[in-house]
Image (cartoon, rainbow over all chains, first blue to last red; front, side, top):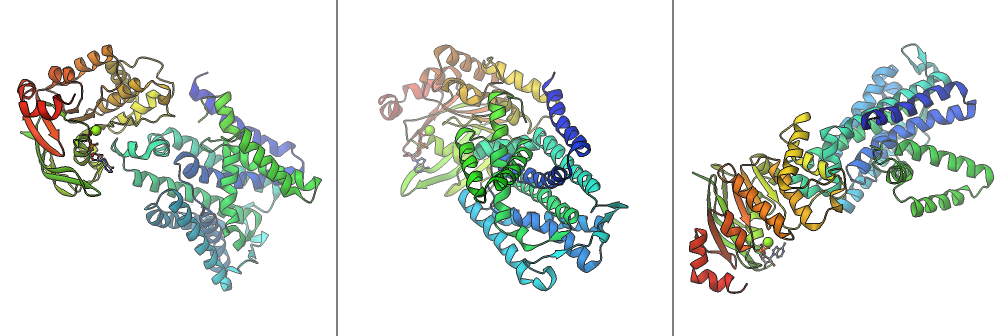
Length: 314
Length: 235
Ligand SMILES: Nc1ncnc2c1ncn2[C@@H]1O[C@H](COP(=O)(O)OP(=O)(O)O)[C@@H](O)[C@H]1O
Ligand SMILES: [Mg+2]
């Protein structure tokens, strides 16, 4: 099989398995997997910036929340239908990530981490400050009766699963497409050696800005869909915790691999789920497993698979 | 017609004057060697020419246009190519991809592969193009740098000590390659190996302590007593 055929078979295969899992999974795991696919889409967005471009952001919750609140606020206060509300979420993601990029990309390394963290904190505080509209930490519920998109009831578990699958498929395939395009290859080169990229005649700033906007928009799409599918928007999703999650998922699954974000999100979700069934000190078990993984698989699960087995993994 | 010229170009590092008011002129199509003892300011001078370093004073004119304030990547797009003295390849990316990145700025689709193969052939890097560039020996990384420069089809090719770490046969190949470029590409070659300089250069510029000490044909420079005192004598 050619490299291209193998890549298509593997990634297409995962999507096919996830699609089919819908029909065999018990209700509990079925619900989990829908949630995991939306969160993995968020992780895919994060991975594009961190794993492929080499920029470590500590503020991606800002984009997730921009998408979620762009969607939810326009439904709540502007009586928008789900489709235009989702578009509003996307637009918020594009605007916020472009603005953040123009400001934060003047810095690099640790300064970039701090600047993104501070902007995300400012975003979180803004949501709390305008509690009259956002209901702050408490958040607000989007009634099931209003979550009907093109006649599809998104509160229904089956259609919710398909909607989550659809989002994940779009994010996975667009990542796969992007990192194999010349643009994506320049991003990888920036991660490896930015000065060399500049001296090959590419503008590193424009490429990083492009990566940040795509990454932020994908994260916002995940935030908007999450709010719509699960019928809730709250300030917790803008907190620093939600900036750290995608970093952990991506590190575990394998930064700079297309499948890593899904694998990491799935792994972490079930690790906490299983550990909490065994003991109340479940975070301790999760912590030990995470430490073991960073020791024995420092490149993440898919990173190890690429290193040991499949050198062709994109 | 000169492709490149500098006027009063200067650079200080914490009080040290690395390059001082250098006026330099390079006619189109020429192969120019830039020589001088270690620390003479050669790398700093070409750094200001290609935009890696900002000049403290003076101007750089490339192809009739003042590029002094222009960002490095935009100068490269205008036809300069620069190979690093301290090898700077993408170590974890395949050899092939290193050259392809350089090629894709001007080519697309199947043309990229063809250009990459040709550039690798020309420099004599015929080993497995799929291995990581970081696995190559130091000398072969120098050759890879050279291939990355060539594949850009530049108008001005700046080479900073390209033969450092090469074997005799690789140096011979390099010499032949630069000779083949003569007339088509303007080359600015920083080189310590006088044998190479004598073979490939149309003209030689000698730098010492941040200033131009002498300029002339290879033979003139070879016989210049001041140059011998400053440079050849210390070798
Ligand atoms: N980034 C730098 N910071 C401080 N001093 C530098 C720097 N780069 C070069 N120098 C100094 O400038 C002088 C010229 O260096 P360089 O241009 O590298 O010389 P050459 O390439 O001719 O050997 C040397 O004395 C060197 O130590
Ligand atoms: Mg030097």
